[in-house]
Image 1 (cartoon, rainbow, N blue to C red):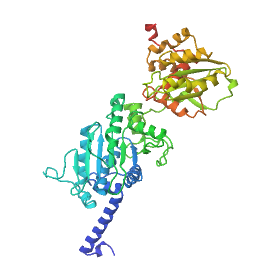
Image 2: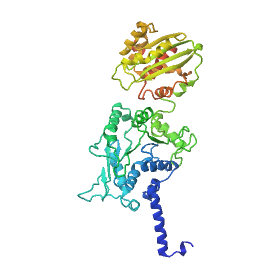
Image 3: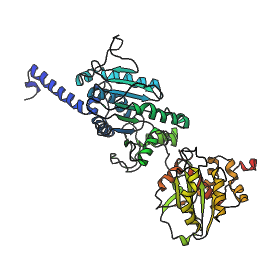
Image 4: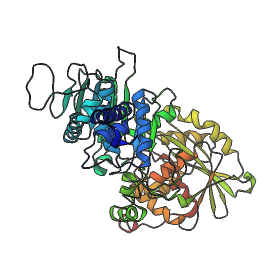
Amino acid sequence: MNGNDLSESELLQLLADLQELEDRQSREDILTYIVATTDPRKPYSVNWSHRVLASKLNAFVRGEIPYLMVFMPPRHGKSEQVSRALPAYIHGKFPDDEIFAVSYLDSLATEMCIAVQDRMETEAHKRIFPDAQIHQQGVKYTIGTRNSSEHDIKGRLGVYRSAGVGGSFTGKGANWIIIDDPIKGREIADSEAFRERLWNFWKADLFTRLETSLKDGRKGQVLITLTRWHEDDLAGRLLAEMLKDPNAIQWEVVSFPAIKEDDSNPDDPRDIGEALWPEKYNEKHLASIETTIGERDYGSLYQCNPQPKGGISFKNTMFEEAELPPLMTFDYFFCTVDTAYKDKQANDFQCFSWWGSIADELWLVDNIMDKVVALKVEKWARPKIDSWSEQYTFRQIWIEPKGHGIYLNQYWASEGKAIPSEEDMKKFFADRRFDKLERANNVIPHLAHRVVKINKTLTNRKELLKQCYSFPRGKNDDFVDTLVDALKIKYGKSTSLLDSFLS
């Protein structure tokens, strides 16, 4: 039997059955829902990455992934799925739930809200989710809301509220929080004050609004999608917390850079060097974009990475992780120290780095770095200080004579440790009149044709190298300070043009 053999009523029934099948699929799969509710005059193009993201969003909606982060390049379909379709889909699945949507400005949050409302106005959405309907625009009513920043579900308890960063959700709760680009751009991201403001907004105003559904016991859930403008952004802080504390929120991360750089993501089937969506942005096109906007912005926007390839000031070609030679083969050892010399410097680390010299090679042989209050530094560092002070041809311990460093120098000198003289320290630390970037730039030329070798057994070596590659824009640079001093000791200080004016 073919279509020509069917009666009109049978044909209509067949079409209705096919439509019902598609609608059932749309209720269970967000990508099918998106395709069904998208204007056919501008159909939604589906790439493999959209299917992977949709599978994660389906798991998110089912509660299997309660905390989700999504990083993808601009114009690659991320916001269409996450910010415009997902809230409408959640309304359909849970019409009694409340949703918060946040972006960097009220105006962008408004655009997102209107986009959600437009999707819910489609005939497809009304057919797929008949219990998740919103009021008509412009109609006045005594119960129910619909405006450019908020709407509720007719006859149900569900509500959608949107606001910019800093907007008030006082007195309100949410089963779902969706954060889309909470930082406007590079200039704002580089502001420590704004990053702190966003962090406090997340902790005090947003996260505390997340609540459990009393109807079925579902816990509140959060999705964050953003451009990684800075390693100390909201995502960076949350991921750092997750790695440090098993009791912190454990996030699932979906990250698809425009060009694949490694095989760390099992959900990414591409070969290294392959574009994410070559039909839209091929490798040549992306290379042109990188040249136009610069390495750093390209890294943030397109590679989902706040650190440019190979580092900013210090490049990855300047370091090599290697097996430590026998200690007796070293010519001498020394120690450089960076102290958070005031107790109020709660975000800074105490960092002690031990270095070894073999001919022209500089080795990082040992390191301890942690957040320790000033009054406890001596007890914390003493075992390493005692051990290395007894090693073969150990030279000096360089601690800037400032704040608590003055006490450490005096105390360890009284014990016979290898502390430089006051005159030597005065000369050595005279370059503190320059800022950290200037001091680093004075010694980086020494690494043009040589590398610093890192003891591969150091458990914190990845964190130490991360500080180097993100300098001077990273959150922490305590190890970098000890590295710069070590390069100065080993190879001598490069001459800065400022020296001739400031000497």
